Image (tube, rainbow, N blue to C red):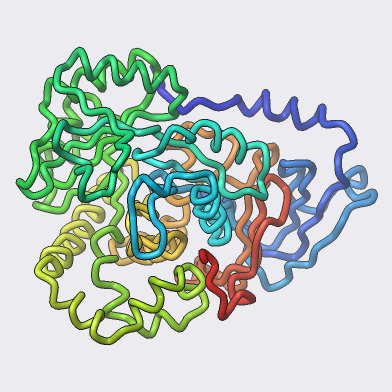
Length: 456
């Protein structure tokens, strides 16, 4: 039986939209090139009505009466990006930890995702008790930030990943079962709390911590599937990833970074329809900004950084110390292996999702990480169109969301408007002119905010 995240069906959403009283007049977006999430439609017209895309192409007379027209000549429109793996409410300046999981911090992060064109996000674990309340509030008010889905606290290993002390988990929302029965109970509790997906951490973090035992994660996967919930697993190495695939996991939530993927694992993932979220930027972020300090002067990056982070990263002594760190050679090797395995899996037809782990740590910069990930995907052999499809149509499909990720009649009007064509150069995804969510312009342009600290 197909498992998907909890959400109203597209039919229900359309009925609700049509029933809205005192509907606002249509909005007509003229003269833009449109990438619909799968293909280039060329220069055309989009008509928005209420929260939805009402028409593609020259609008019929019934949709032009009283309409507001916006000329997007020279612009490119694509669906709002969808991330399958982020975190919110876990950082404040140079610090991180669950003490920051407050409404204000979560909304701050969701608004930053939204400003950078990521209009739907999935917070994969470490969410505090306020998660479901904030999720509901944001879904009703597009101006509050990107739409939020997530895994609640998630399920980790006793005394292991995610390591409470290292991650600053003072209140530790993560369930840590020690028996299969406890694992099943944890899944049921999270299902009753209304999570959208179950998150497991299966990683010994380089042999430094105990790893979740196979009987525990197998019980959790089985229980989740009985409740029609997908399971996403944090991994680093190939061996646990392979066993999780054999056990029926739905989503491998990080790239395999220790060894080249075997043909047997590639075949199993493809045949079982397992999704793979590479998160290449997660390791690259450890050295990226120290290696490229000139990026800190670019508005696209500068506006994503809190003042304390920007000031620290601008210091030559910090840059030198960061690049000389013991973990940097390992991080570089992990990026290279991740790119190699992503290329192999993509060419074999394995389902690829989109995510970065942005927001978990200060160096995993919300918004910037996503656009950098698109560029990294092209280094792994994706065309720009293929990378954008992963970050829109495919990422929505991973979540079971059939109302977004594509520009099509009846879908949500979650749109990213760019000042240059990303199909020619994927780095043009950073040329953000406007962001629309549920038929409203909610952000943009990034360049206009030069010299400000967006997250202060």
